[in-house]
Length: 121
Image (cartoon, rainbow, N blue to C red; front, side, top):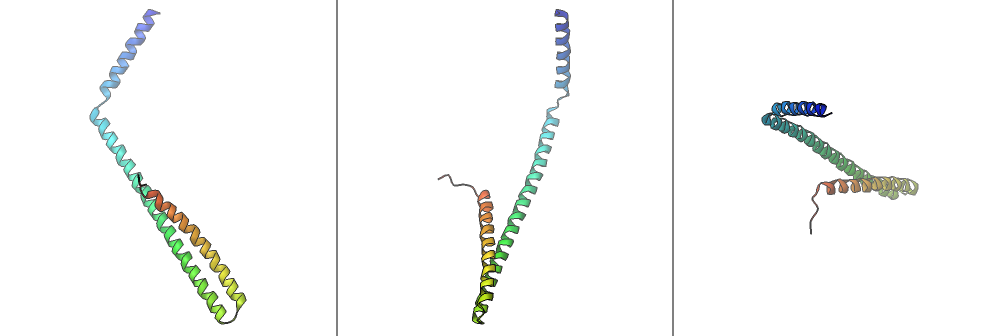
């Protein structure tokens, strides 16, 4: 058994020497830099997607607010013309858009707070 142990040790030693001689610190460093560049590209893409999603949320929020205001204006107009049923329907739609706007505002605040650094106070 001692002979097989010694042969095994010599083979492992030779394999380690081959691997060590194949390692080129400059190539390893270049590969590390390239990997970091790829990570940076992916990070930039993720940030761009997050910014685009936030802008979409802002647009949806603004649209919901605009629609809510428009339906409120229509409800007032219906009341001025004496049509209470139409005014109720307009207020119902206004309420729907207001709830949507509030929900979007919550999402928007949450996404904004995610990117702001927390104060260490």
